[in-house]
Image (tube, rainbow over all chains, first blue to last red; front, side):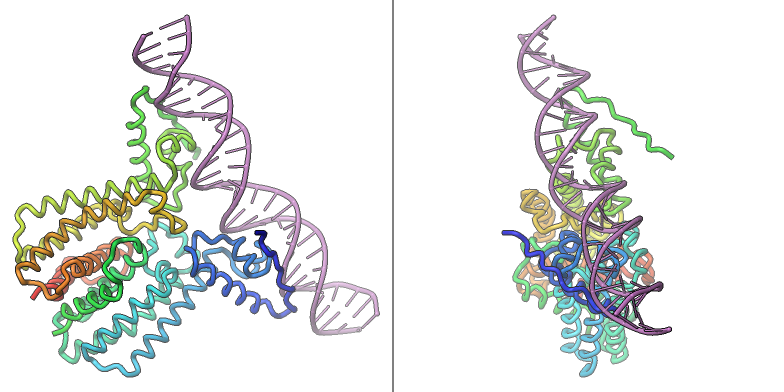
Length: 210
Length: 210
DNA sequence: GGTGATAAGTTATCAGTGATAGATTATCGT
DNA sequence: ACGATAATCTATCACTGATAACTTATCACC
């Protein structure tokens, strides 16, 4: 079975941005099927209907392309957090819901989550340097809504910890632990996933709230 | 500054295993300084004082070498857990202590912890197929001491969750979250570390035990 | 309608990657 | 001394991300 090798027609003069979108769409589709590092620039280019070097007219590096997708993914998370904040009340049920929004996002956008929170600066520092730390910044910004929720619960006198900042960091660590492990070690013999997430959130709630 | 290019003398006939150890040592050092994917087989070979293809006499693939380091890291953790189990009693205080053993292991041996739990081992998803699932088996073994402790607490009627395995995985995720973030994001504006760890363990205890 | 500027895209190529094939050398038991 | 073989080398492969230099379509303008 040969590859189709269908080339997309050349774009009119000012439509470079449109081609850029097509590349991002093609890349996102490939990244959802395989790991980022397993997808080559040639595969992305073919899916987008252009030659491989043509990618570099729109993205300085492959990491740049990945970073762009990550920033967009976190914009989605920000939107979800904002949506969840609309009917927010400082209650245990709302707490659970907020926790799940975070975990669900990580599992639905594993590549974005990986780049933002799981790649080590000191180890693969080149990535954050090349991308200006934009994905991580976008991730932290999306996280601010969550921070505000915890402060709200603390103000309502519902939290155990007397230091809301410490509690927020602790809860973040708790959420990140499950999310990152489910992403990095999917083959581990976990108990049924929904029950696991539910149990985890319940444990965090009992540990954090009175 | 040229690379030294110092070749290690050829090993005597039966000493292949010794060279294997040298390769693993060299690789672990390089992996502690850079991400696994950023370290090439040629760099490992040079650090071990041999040619690059010579690696393949001892490891079928690069993933195989990484898997070996992973197994060893798990073994170290297993030993720590077993040692901590000596004076174990199903009490909240002992629970706290066990949690700290895990976190301390990660912070004292960040390289080992990275290899075992944080490193994304393969470009594609077929890592376990190629490594025969050995790292995961070692991980499950290290996990058993943990499972036993939680089962003990569960039998004593001290746990909230009715499923001890699920609770164990949840607690592990909680521990891993803080440990991995402290390793990967040391520059994050954390609250004072001892207070953070103490608060985290306290939250996990409240969430897990009655 | 030709003309030059330039956006959009090409082919050819580079150094570096993991991995393999086949020859070579040192060490062993006999 | 000799054959066997463990240990290791050089040479090479297909593929990767990335760059250089060239071509071509589209545009504004006289």
